[in-house]
Image (cartoon, rainbow, N blue to C red):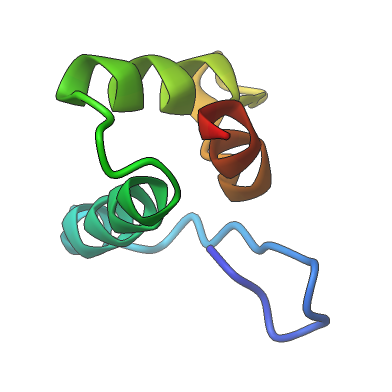
Length: 72
């Protein structure tokens, strides 16, 4: 999620629950639709998956900047 350290930093809080996931994903996808209003759900999913930053556990962290750039 966005960090308070600077305008361009992100933070990982391992103690956060899944209740954070839905509003965060909705916000990221809304940003994507502002950039490309004609994007299909499949295009959005591909862009968010392809631009994710690999994480130690084998998953990926959302990369909002990369996601937006991929939709442009």
